[in-house]
Image 1 (tube, rainbow, N blue to C red):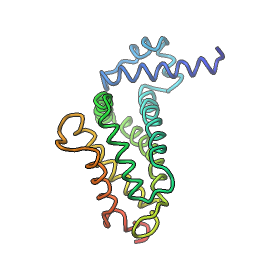
Image 2 (image 1 turned 90 degrees about the vertical axis):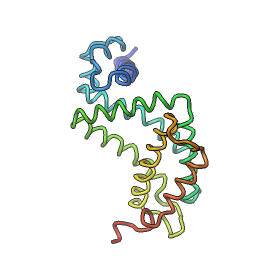
Image 3 (image 1 turned 30 degrees about the horizontal axis):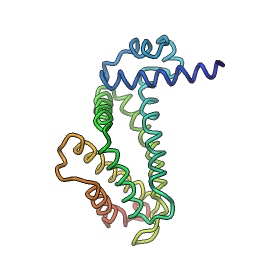
Length: 207
């Protein structure tokens, strides 16, 4: 194994170990246990990620990357805005109905708790999530809708609204709090949000 291969192996092992320990212990997660699970020393964590917070931020980016890659595949080019939003809603519904939805929700809540306990980590996590969401903004921008073509700023506003909608539903469905909610509800709610004139039709840069 080359040095580069060994470094990537250790990085992957640490991310996998961090997922398990952070999901369980949150801000109380110990670097010693993460390193032991990964079969490396704590020095490897500092060498690869700089700090515990650096490891957590890398964990979130690693967790979100395949998610956004799957979203891109689920929303093909050529759809108008409302059809693209509906495709995204169907994708998110499948995520919520998946057997792994509860473990994912547990990790999300744990990361939120960690961010609340550490302002620096919270800021870095927010920046990481915003960076990943730029891919979603790009997926919606440029699509036709009733008032013309969606601008990047409008796509950002829409993405913010969809995130709020689906985070709420994404918590409610696995916990049994969203009674009667099904895939069509997700689609209808997302299309209604995208159709809202005050949210999408006005471009903030034009005012």
